[in-house]
Length: 461
Image (cartoon, rainbow, N blue to C red; front, side):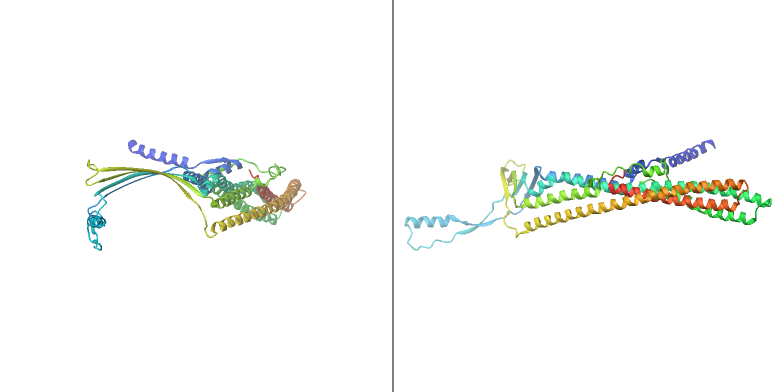
């Protein structure tokens, strides 16, 4: 029995070990969550692959400027030799000599030459050679070489644009969890308070000091509050699931947030508004696009310049009546070097129109950059005012919540001293819950406004 159980226990332990390894716990600050998203998400991985693809394209363009070497070999065997009809000049030549020497009467007709089948081919033919070409000047290739760095930087800006989107999403989901968790904490405290109030009222009702109506009021409020408690608990779980998706973490893993959220957190580091347009990834991308468009215009302008290439060839030809291994095979070598110059003369003004199209596209791009800068200016004004209003409202709701806490504490103390009714305590608790709800709504709006403002400055870290 022990021998039979040992393999089963080993299998169970291995399964448990695999599950333990599959499920991980991540304790994250907001920056760690963002870094994890950069590491895990497919959008970032694909953008990084696009950078490597551009590097490969750049190497391909570089290869066009390097020497090109090609080898070729061909072998053929003629079962029947090709032939041409060639005149037999011997008879005609004799008559021509006799006429010239005056040995034939004048007017003697020279017979037409006899056509014979003549072949210039050998049955066995072999040709092998190697060709070297070197591009000396071609406008599109050399402009492409100049565009390599700008192309890589352009792909880099696309990668940064993806990172900005993911960063914004991670920030919103991370802080949404913190706010919901804190709100749930206060709801739990409210449930505890009402449960105690319900027990006290029940005891007082049993002793005849309060009416059943007072007990029922607390019960109704407690039931509603527990429903809200369940909704918030589910919201916390859903928020965790959304954060896991946003940072590329499996849903089976656990995520623990290490940061705390307070008014001070929302207001921290908001005075650094030294803004430059180049801080925005959209402007960086457009500037790189403009640089590439300028190179495209240069490429079309250089199209009027001749293209120059050098070439060289070495060829070996084998000719013979028998296979090439036979000693009677004749080997003939040939070699040449050359220079090819292609001069564009007239193309029906096509190149001129391509230059004009490229110039107009560059003008459109400059207009787009100006429009995007104006949109950024508007975005900064809107987000700054929204943040100011959100912070003012947050301060007001914070004061209201603290005042409601004070009112509740005073009312509860008076109730314990027999100077107020449970209804007043219940009413003060309701007002405290409303104040807390308003506070957390204001806190969330302030967080969102802060993220929007920092994004408009290009400084969402």
